[in-house]
Image 1 (cartoon, chains in turn yellow, green):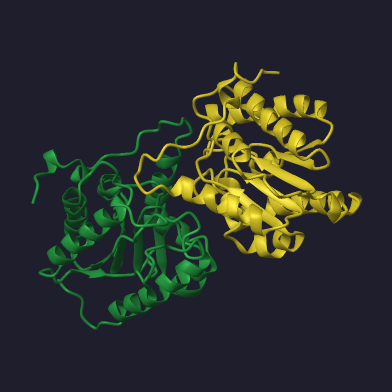
Image 2 (cartoon, one colour):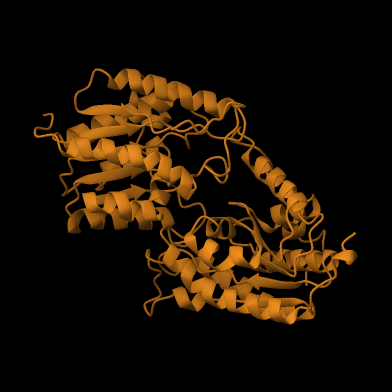
Length: 229
Length: 224
């Protein structure tokens, strides 16, 4: 397993404001504020795959009722998520479950580095929230036809499957196979741009995820509010 | 008006596959196929603001009944849309209206260059579809608080609105219902990342847009 500062995918990094409207920092600041205002039982954190979920009906139907917060930020790599979690996005909250979905944007890193980055985030979450379960979602295949990024994401998933069990609180959920047709293609009905999910695509993911979250929430005993200092 | 060669925003340019999964080209090819299979009355073309519109209930509610096609691609700037429309996405169809919404992703270009790029697209559409009316949507403000991109986008809108005023085959339509509040902020209830619209944001944009498109479709005679 890659060590912290040897693995570039496990180095916390904020996103530079290249475009000029400071949107990344505005979103991070809002999430930090939401930590002060909210008492989520479930925290979703990651990239656009997480962020977009909140825009569709499925969020209101399946995840809002679980008292979920969504800290997805489009374009984020493992480095960016790590930075956000270390800079306020875990303050004052005690979720019972954290859903982590990130890695598909780590274009400068190898599959091993990406998996190491994801494990580093899971480790951080477990250190900060020792009683929380961490649900790591597998990276979905991308691109209309087989291509190198599919292989890379599949390798990340394979590594996660073998590395995550070492962290007692982490679970791995991978629905990749649901999106691959027999000819290896991905349909635009599931991913409108062969990366981002349509509402139909999210429905495929939401059912097993929601079932898993309900199971975890039912198993977790109610934490006494007095323990929140 | 800048010559094509010296304005990158007005030079048809495909998107490079820098990530390795060919998604941009896959989407373009799919759109070209749709032109062969369908007979749309309205074609929407542009960037992610167009593309995401298709994912919300509002599309099925307001635009599907009008026989619309959606050729939005996330990240596209004017030069990418210019390339796509020059390479098949206007072939084999005869829509009455083309809705064009692009310009916010032209990073590094001046407002003048972006406006010229938009006008280049308007001219191309007119050349390929002489009977269609092009509705050019204003580029929305972005960022949580005032910033240079808001100024740039406002300047683009002003230049485009002026350039379109003398044309009969195209017109400018402002779809900003007032996203910028009195304190200069944009709410995440309207734009969840201060750029892309929420369902609520799309509602505010699409209702007037739908009315405008309907009135263009209902016109008995279209401009030649």
